[in-house]
Length: 86
Image 1 (cartoon, rainbow, N blue to C red):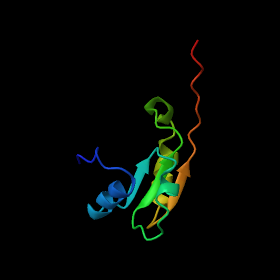
Image 2 (image 1 turned 90 degrees about the horizontal axis):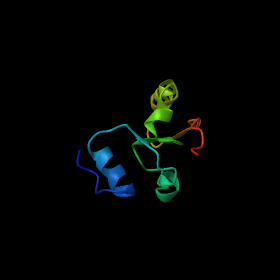
Image 3 (image 1 turned 60 degrees about the horizontal axis):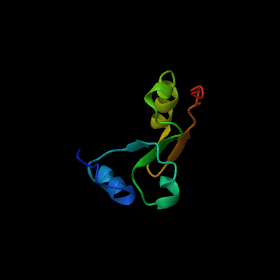
């Protein structure tokens, strides 16, 4: 979509304008930065965005997307199972 230069409110407005119903993000501060209940788009926020950690948790994410509605906020807690590197 070439929206990589957009941030926060501008990104949400562009997504809403393009007809998206939900946005999946790893930005846990987005809710506090954009505390605007007039939003049409739902937010699904992941606690981890590392693809290796997301494997096996697709149902959690899809369930949150299905539950989302206009102006909703869903936090999806993805367990961090990575072992500390030595």
